[in-house]
Image (cartoon, rainbow, N blue to C red; front, side, top):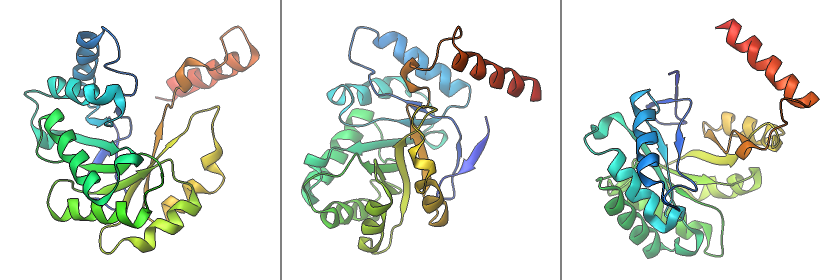
Length: 222
C-alpha cells in the first residue's frame, strides 16, 4: 500500500483508508468487523470515524476490530459534531470517543462541519486536546477555502492537519481551488465517499464503458 505524508505531520499514511460512515446501523456488525480487520491486514491502517456514525456505535465496532493490533500501527481519526463543539463540549466528546474506541489518543480529531459555536472556541479546544496528549493533531471537515482562511489565523501553535471533503468522479468541485490551497498550506486533503455510493454509470452506458477503459489501462500499467 502506497503511503504519503499526512499534511504537516511526520506520519506516512496509506493513500487509501477505511471509512465507517453507515456502519453499525444494522445487523451486519460481525461482517463489518471482519471487513475492517481484512483491510488492516492489507495495509489499510488509516481508519476514519465520527461520534455521529451509528450514534457512537461505529467507534465501538472499531474497538472490536482493532483489538490486538498495536496502537502504533494504526492511524485513527474521529470527529466532533458542531453542536457539541464548545470548549467544554469538544473535550467531553473526545473523551467519550476515546472510551468507545478503547484507546488513549486519536491521531487526528476533526470538527465535522461548521455550526453555530464560534470557530475560535472549537479550535481553541482542539489545541488544548493536542497539548494534553488526547489527540496528536487537529483538523476540519467540509471546509471551503473561505472557511480555512478564517480558521488558520485563529490557531496559536498547532496547524490544521487535514480537511476531509466530499470527492469522487461525480463531485470534483474541490479541484477548482481547494486542493491547491491545501497543498500550499500543507493541509492533507482526505476525500470521503470516493466511490460515490455506487452511483457511477452502469457498464452498459457510454460513461460506464469509458470508466472501464480507464480502469483497464491502469491495470495494464501496473
